[in-house]
Amino acid sequence: MTLSKRLVGLMLFVCSGVVAAQTTVAMCRLGKKQHETVSVIAAQPIADSEVISLKMESEAQPHLIFGGENDASRGSKVKIRCVGKEEKILLLVGEFLGSGYPRGFAVRFHEGRLEQIEFAEPGLPAFVDLTSSEMRLVFSRHGPEIASQFAVYTYVSGAGAAPDVKEAQRVPRPVDGVRISVLP
Image (cartoon, helix red, strand yellow):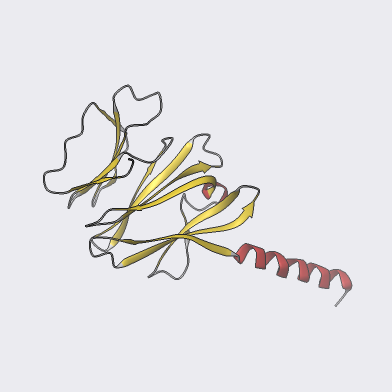
């Protein structure tokens, strides 16, 4: 083997070790019985950003939070909260490459699977409403394109995330669910 081949092999080995370096930055036990643990994994640090992934306890490998490309899931100034008592959900928001605005998501473990809502707001929601068929994220601090007091993102079980953000002057408490306060 020539010296150049050895050098290339050594560089590939070193680079593969850097790519594999991962840090668990948060863990949350999701669901009503809080029996499914999800970990937030940060990897491949560059300056103040890292590639963020989620890993379910039941999965072998983590998956990127915003699709299949590292750049979409590379973020900085990431805030993570695990909220709720009766049922816990995971919230994450940060500045992610390519989006040009703060971006985040909420994850719920419901009826044996993950339900995820992505949002484009400058911070975490004021509160989250959970029912047997729906998850709503309600933001009181939102972008200027929303004229009302609240911006509401909805995920309907079995159907997925609603395509549009709704505006609301008031958001009644769910009759058959719980309201989880997020912001003080």
